Amino acid sequence: LTPLKNIYSVLDIGCGCGIIAFCIGYRLSVQSTTHRQKIIGIDCDQESIQETEFNLAQFPKGGNQHYEFYCEKIQDYALFTSEMFDLIVSNPPYFQNSLKPENPQKIASKHGDRNLSYDELIDCSLQLLNPSGSLSLILPTAESIYFKKSAENKLYLKQEIEIKPTIYKAANRNIMTFTKQPSSLIDRQTLCIRDGAQQYTEEYQRATRDFYPAFAKKT
Image 1: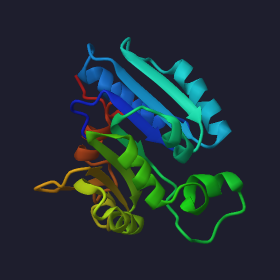
Image 2: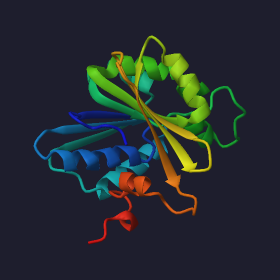
Image 3: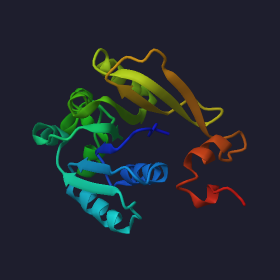
Image 4: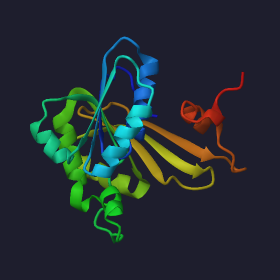
């Protein structure tokens, strides 16, 4: 759902097993077979990076694509890298100042107090984005309000897609795209996953069919 026009360098912050990086890589390979594309993933969990490296070996990469994955905090990476990116994506730890589970991996992946606050994510994005670059992330709807507040006067909302589990329920996830420059018009959309009969909607199938064989067009 993230716009990928003129995107040749991508940073995935908190890449986990690499699924978002690989999905973007596939979409980029379909769009362009001539431009060199670089995709970097950062995660502070060693097991996640090991899983990503395994997945990378199985993933069908385009000949013009280069992937790198690092076990590192984005705050540390930002201190020493000279890289700049057209697109930064993140599914960040989204519970701020909330009751934490006992499992330390769940704390790292879902709670941002310890490893990555919203302010830190915004500051790192400002440093690492090209002047015309964008930051896209997905958050629970309630947390998206806090993030937008944190981003005020730093990053500017360009697109927001509300994700509704069904047509009868309120949105529970928001995909937001920010840029360094104010947008004259914010593109606001809604995507419903299931219809009233609990079947996947046509718009959801259209958005995800590249990654789900069951949604492929019938010939």
